[in-house]
Amino acid sequence: MKFGILVNEGPYNHQASDSAYQFAMAALEKGHQIFRVFFYYDGVNNANRLQEPQSDDRNLVKMWSKLAEDHGVDLVVCVAAGLRRGIKDENLAPGFRISGLGQLIEAGIQSDRMVAFGD
Amino acid sequence: MIHTVNKSPYERNAFDSCLKHAVKGSAILLYEDGVYAAVKGCTAAARLADAVADHPVFVLGPDLKARGMDPANVVDGVRVVDYGDFVDLVVEHGTVQAWL
Amino acid sequence: MDEEMESGVVKKFMFVNRKAPYGTIYALEVLEMVLISAAFDQDVHLAFVDDGVYELKKGQDTAGIGMKNFSNTYRALEGYDIEKLYVEKESLEERGLTEADLVVPVEVVSRAGMAELMDGMDVVLSA
Image 1 (cartoon, rainbow over the protein chains, first blue to last red):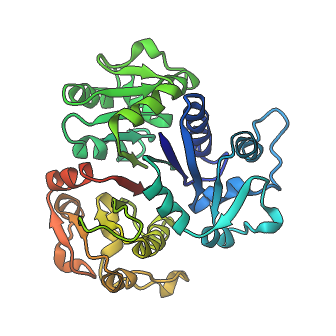
Image 2 (image 1 turned 60 degrees about the vertical axis):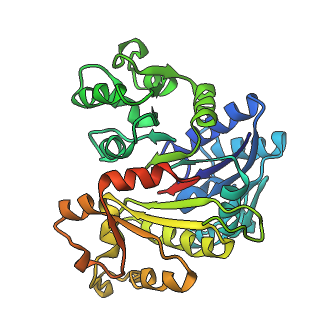
């Protein structure tokens, strides 16, 4: 089955990004496909490669980048929400791309299931 | 349809709003801070116990354990699941409505 | 809507608004999502439930808080062929509001009616 995932919150402040990541990993382990993960609202902050959490903490930005690298998952950051919050190509982590909100609607159309994680 | 609730019933109305809008037979999954509603003995658990008659109800075990809540001490009829089950539930129950 | 659009797929989308405007950005950014969805020829529904009904309150004046008043945008949705706006009766009543308090014509539905509507959707996006 094809899943679309919407992440509405940035890392650390809320559990949303962690939950979305755990869900995505579980879906992949079960042989499902992730059509796209779309980052909206403060969720765009998941793509900021300048984040440096303490060494004993998880690094969600790197975890998402690795997910994209290992499994070819399409990670899309909303351009409008990203610009509003200072997420640009200059600080975009590997594996993410910036595009329009239409990519979210398209994910809703193309995926068998859309799952949203937020506050 | 499967409804997901990730907020404590004592902080937001997401849990109660979900219960008021979930049609009979639709599934309900509690995760993140939503899991507190599933713990026996709290006032929200009484409302959840009523919902169990009309809905398959699930609670995410890893979120219970993270919060020091015993998965063995959840409302009768509520099934404790892991992330893999979460995926299966979404496959099985169709459209997801997240009560954020 | 059962006519086949260019993409061949027409899904029932519902954007669920449950949060008040200005205190958080969700109402505004959901609206931006809704406007984009118009380009995809989908069967778009907007639901206003709980504090989401405050988004439609008439007479919003944001001059004093330095934020953009986006409430008029709801009136522009019709121009995008987004005409299925559902407001929950109980949510209005709980907040002492009536249909006359809203900036835009809507269909007021009961809580049970809203629950049935939600249950029939293919994609539900909420914030």
